[in-house]
Length: 232
Length: 279
Ligand SMILES: Nc1ncnc2c1ncn2[C@@H]1O[C@H](COP(=O)(O)OP(=O)(O)O)[C@@H](O)[C@H]1O
Ligand SMILES: [Mg+2]
Image (cartoon, rainbow over all chains, first blue to last red; front, side, top):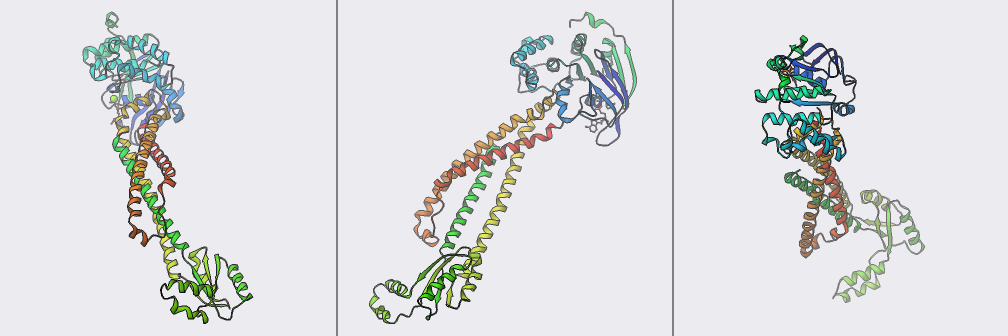
């Protein structure tokens, strides 16, 4: 669950780029965040990851109060969240399998569990045949699916995606969002930032529009429903 | 961490090591020159019998006295005549009327206090005169002080420079892995988890550099000693003392190299990760 109350954020004591925002996202929701470039979408994501701190208001994520969370507790908190970025952020010297498995090594998961779990999430994103490939040998869409598998591997309660389709061919964007929808159907809360309104119209869901650091629209919209027929 | 870093660290260690060895040898040389210094106290002619014994006691009661040795005039004359090899007969007649005074050969503990000690000796009733290398001792002491100050300053500077050089060259390796570090932070890795591989990498680099510096120092020092000890004329000039034989201290030198190397390597490496951990 995410609950922002009257939250403001400023970089380096400058002007507020988030200005007194109130957002509540329930467990199991699927939420699109849209807005123009520079509106503050990425800053909002950084706020949810405690990469930046609020200068005002209260921030609750997955039961953690981020304004009082101590530095040394951040790792534990972040293990409850999966993140996907526009630029994939895969490690080029590692294979697909290693890129995903290392997340579980970070949290000292048992070897046998890592093997089982990594194979499972690779299957989920449909990359069974690419486990030994390196990121540079994959297309943009495939790389983003690896990043998605990596975000899912430690079974997060909340999945955050910041423009996950930004570097992916338009045809493959649907595939990525379809995967996110399927993941959401299995109970994971999903927050996805995008500036592609077409995607939102197609899939539907909760839509939050941010403009210059404030929420200007927050409602549920219907999708075309056509994604239901797509092969997810 | 790379060959460049290892080389930089090896050179730093060598600078520290070579300089320390040099300073240690200078110290040994100075100390041994110092211990050769003798003060001679000549007694007045009318001091005889028991007065000589009480004079010796009076000298021994002074602070800063290491050794007092009575040197009777007869002995002095014998030694003198012996030195005049081939002309002994000329000096034989001196035995009937010995012109040399009775004396004490004295060694003091702390040569930096030589002036005060000599003044006290001169003020004794029984003293005729005192021969002491006062100026020499003063210069020697100044030299020792200068050497130890320079040693400390240079060593601190060298260690500081080494740490800076290491953290600079590890920055490159950290930079190439910043993406990895960044992702680790997002998936909830603790700082210590992220630092551990860098720590061991730095430690390993330090150990390799320590071994390198040890090998170079071993061969370098041995070769240098061969040259110096084979050159008799050079050795006779300053030749009051043997240079520090490397065998005696080699394990200390190796241990110090390995310790300093691994500490500098590990610290430098860990320090350079800090910037990238603030996500
Ligand atoms: N690290 C930063 N330091 C200073 N200003 C920043 C930083 N990141 C973003 N900003 C500013 O904050 C505002 C919102 O940026 P961002 O959240 O990245 O927007 P969006 O993701 O919606 O395009 C922009 O004006 C941007 O210039
Ligand atoms: Mg952005």
